[in-house]
Length: 200
Image (tube, rainbow, N blue to C red; front, top):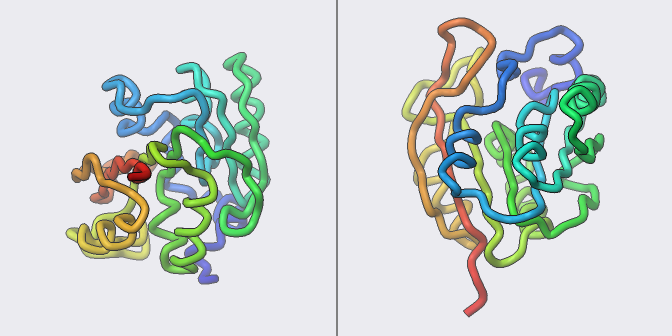
């Protein structure tokens, strides 16, 4: 895995521009708009836990996973302070049994990384943790803006549609800019709300 995707090293260095210090604006918008319905939620790549805690605050029973232990220590402390329960786990999304299926999935910047490492494995993992009707809000780098070393991996709209369509219907796909902790650095992104196809 390239240094860019070595998240243990990046957390150790404090090189985590994605850790904005607040829940994702896109997640808040989807929740406020009533677009994410259900009782159980899985966050993939939860980092320091703010999005998972927001989901728990809204009444979801939340499992939140990250491959790196360091941010989960912060996440667990934050959950205690917020007086909510979140099942934070160190886990490899591609390999580990994460339970489920879940009503809602959320990832901020995981799909755009794992699709480059093992797209087929990622698709199988998503299938394992969802059922027909499950909702998935995914935030990824947008290829309409040139990829940079500082910014996230990018993906085209056509790639998103091709890679999600075997299992999911895309309910909404729009552009936005990522929240970060680096001032005016806000990379262009895609917000994708998808629903696992229902059995016919």
